[in-house]
Length: 68
Image (tube, rainbow, N blue to C red; front, side, top):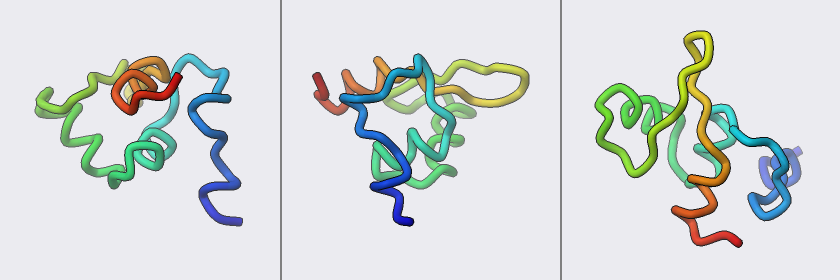
């Protein structure tokens, strides 16, 4: 199973937030890049922190990528 069949497109995503691996897939970045953005607070997106985990807002991802 490849990543394209594992993750739904952002246009069809119904969850309010995505975990780091899925957000990284959609952004075509490595998970560590997103973690660095979160730590340094210098990336194009700011995650939510939920019980020590990062959650990336689906709406922010859509806006950044221009997905309707």
